[in-house]
Image (cartoon, rainbow, N blue to C red; front, side, top):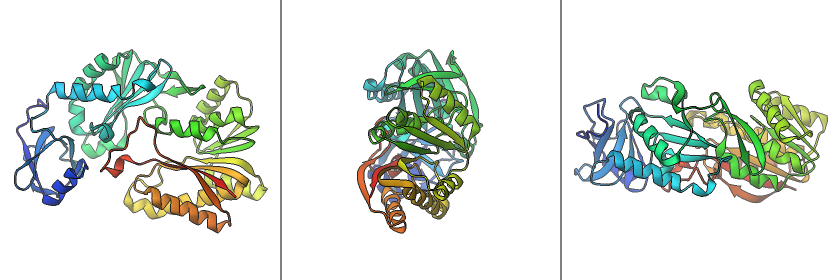
Length: 392
């Protein structure tokens, strides 16, 4: 089916229409006056109860998120519409692109291209099409990216569970050109090997890039990096610290971290395989103290039902980290759970500080890097919270 053959109209409820007009992009199951009859339609015209045209959206009948608005235009989209949208997204990042750099070129809803992720690692692109509708545009996207970004190869990393909600299979493979299994990137002078085929997300946690560089300015003495993954925060700390301990539960990630450490010639980083919660207790029992501690855990709250347990987990690791800090020590702490608002995350850090009888100064409030822009009106695009704190 031609995804641009728009002949289906979706009439949504008044409350859903108000949400779209306030800047949100999603319409959920049940928010209909009339749902499209054609389950295979990729793009539909969206209208309010009075049949005023609100724009055009990607349609996913199998998902709880039925519609993802991408245009408020009265005219239906064309291939040229998406070509222009992709090029504008890439042009916003021109200052971040160089042969050794890595950055996100398209950030889904944040760039008004919901369900589409494109990351650049040097000369190579990694593409994710996370909804049934954007999957139907995959060949068009590849053609546009070949022209607009001039890569040597494009890899598909659609091996993510969210596609199951769309009735899509998990797939991974080269879509065009040649793509090596591993590339080397440089982040503000620190070299990293990136496993494009099997690494987390599309290979690397690009959203923390600016936070790693900012946190490095506070690093000194003895450092502890928790949930280190492939060593990103730890290796930024290493040139400024006497010693760094970096812990993660994944042996595979630590193997890459050790290679990254050797690549940079650092000899002061000790990588430890283990459960962070248990390891923090052991360090406290041993009486160890650190000048800087970094907490960059995976999302503890994958959904709202998990929020109570996530809150407990975040509070525990922050409490234990604060206990390990020397007077005037620095805590770098993050949450990538968008179900937990920044205010709630900040409050629980404050609770942890009170419980261990520490005062904390807020040095920096940070979020995801600039290549992951937050779309006003859509709080789901503001998922990463990062605080740099001083413990007194």
